[in-house]
Length: 467
Ligand code: ARG
Image 1: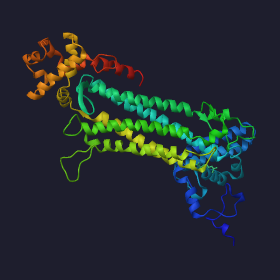
Image 2: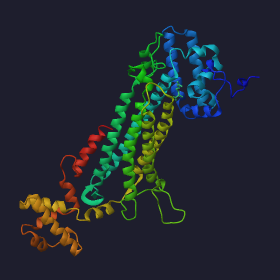
Image 3: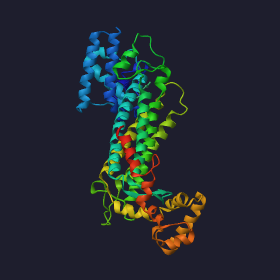
Image 4: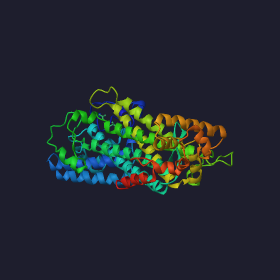
C-alpha cells in the first residue's frame, strides 16, 4: 500500500496536486501557523464573505454558490466562537482550516471561494483587519489613561512637589503639572495611533498572489464592504508589505517607553524614603519573608513589558529586512510578535490606568520635599534680577553664596536671617522672603505651559476638550 494513504503522509488537499507524498513531521511543524493564526478566524471569515459576495456580484461565481459559501462561513464562525471547531495542524493555517471545513459543510461550492485570490492577499487582509482593530482598542485605552491623569491633575493642580532634573531636586512644581506631562506623552501616542489607522486603511484583497488577477473583480467593492477607505494600489507591494504591523509595534514601543518611565516614577515615589504615593493593596504584593514590605509589582512589570515590546519590534524589523519582493514565508513570523506586543501593551495600559486612579498621594510629604534641597534658589536669583536690577549671571553667583551659607548653617534659604542675606548683597530686603516659599515659587511660573496652578488648569481644559 502506498504510504501516502495514511493521514499524516497524504499530500495537502489545498495545494497537493503536484505532490506525491505529504510533508515530513518537522516540515509540518515548522510550516504550520495555525497554533497562533487561529486568532485571525473572525477577520478571515469576514474577508471571505466580502470576497464571495463580490465574486457573485461580478458574475464570477453564481448567486447560489455564494449563498452556500456565506451560510457555511457563518456556521464555521459560530462553531469556532462556541469552541466546537477542531483545528488541524496538517492544514497549516487558519485560511486552509476554514476552507477545508467549508468543503465538508457545503461540498464543491467551497472550492469556488478561492477564485481570484491567494493566501498572500488573504493573510495580508486578515492581519491588517486585526491590527486595525487593535489600534482602535489602543486608542480607546489611551483615552482612558489620559482621563485618569486629567482627574488626578485637577485634584492636584495646587499640590506642590519637587521637580527633578538628574533626579536631583530642581524647582518646585505642582503634582498636577507633572500629571499633565504624562497627558502630553500619551496624547502623542494616541495621535500616532490615529495616524497609523489612516495609513493602513487600504484593502489588500484582490492583489491575489502578487500580480493581480484576470477575473473581473471589483476591489473597490470589497474595500468598502470591509470598512477600508480604498484598495491598495500596487499588488506586488500589497502582498510584501508589513509596514502596518511594524508601525503598530513602533507605536507600542514608544508608548511602552512612556509607560516604563511612569512605572519607574511610581516605583521611586512609593519607596518609604520618598513616600510621595501609596499604592493600594489592589496594586501591590507582599513579601513572603519580610512582613513590612509592600511591593509595587504591577509597576515593575509594566516597566519590564517594555522590554518584550521592544524585542518584538526588533524581531519583525529583522524578519522583514532584506526580503526580496513579494511574499516570502518568513512573513508568517510577523503575527506572534504583534500578538505578544499587543497583549503586553493592553495589560500595561490597563494596569497603569488602575494605578494612577488608585494611588494615594501624600501631599504633605511632597510639599516638605519640595521645600528641601534649596529648590527656591532660582526664585531668589530671579528676585535679585527683578528687584535689585542685577544681571542674571551675578544674581546666580549671589544666590550660590546664600545657598552655601544656608548649607553650612544646616538651614533652608528662607531660614537665613536678613542680616546674613544683606551681608552677601546689600540690596536684599525682607520682601525677598515672599518668593522663597514653594507656593510662591510655583504660582510665579505663569509662562505658557508653566507649572503655576492657573496654567495647569488651562492645560487641563485644553485636553478635556480633546478627550
Ligand atoms: N500562513 C501564511 C502566513 O501567515 C499564509 C500565507 C501563505 N502563503 C503562501 N504562499 N504559502 O503568512
